[in-house]
Length: 255
Image 1 (cartoon, rainbow, N blue to C red):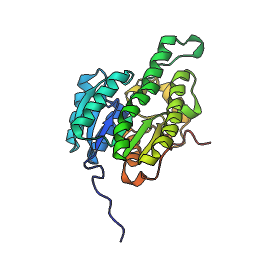
Image 2: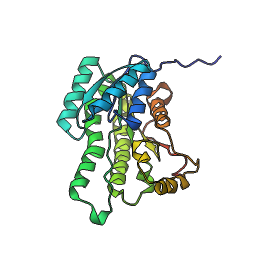
Image 3: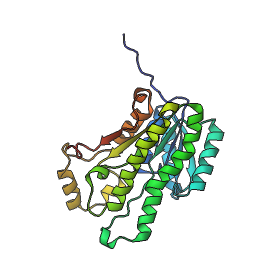
Image 4: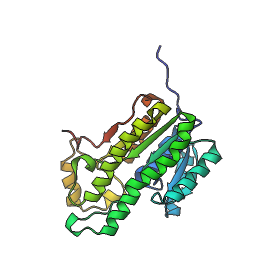
């Protein structure tokens, strides 16, 4: 007789999800809480959205707290994560989801926008991973999942900066996976494609149709489907997976 997996496989674990106030980050926080984790929801400025996300976590039967800090600020990251670790007695799961998209053609792209997108999307992952990995290494246990994007492999006109940061995160993740493997810490990525969020809802119909034409499954993804992939990678069934990029894109990146 096969063993039945626990209904709440993350029971007793503490998770930090950055950029958790809405969209994919919110869905991840809810799913991890549903599976038993205590979830710290990071946000930068949208207090109202963060509070609503925390209520959703609680309605899913979970517990959590809010952590306000800018992932681009190394000192703020270190202080917030150290405080969480002290309060909870450890940190077993880190999901680096926070990110921004500042689109524009290279020939017209502003240096200030380049610096900001690198600071948030790439340096932010470094800051949070460094702060969390210290405790994970000491405990010889931990899961880090970094959100990237289908454009890291396919590219997209007008998103050279965004694609560069997401590709950078994937390279960083593979290197970190090698550094931490001997300490029982796994590092993986989830690369969403075209997901139905507030951002994509704002696109013109013509743009949405163009994206849909390139998706073999013929529909947008749901934030909950991305969350399920993250939950798998931080769960017991993924103990032997590290340095991997899991695509959740309806087939957009098939070679």
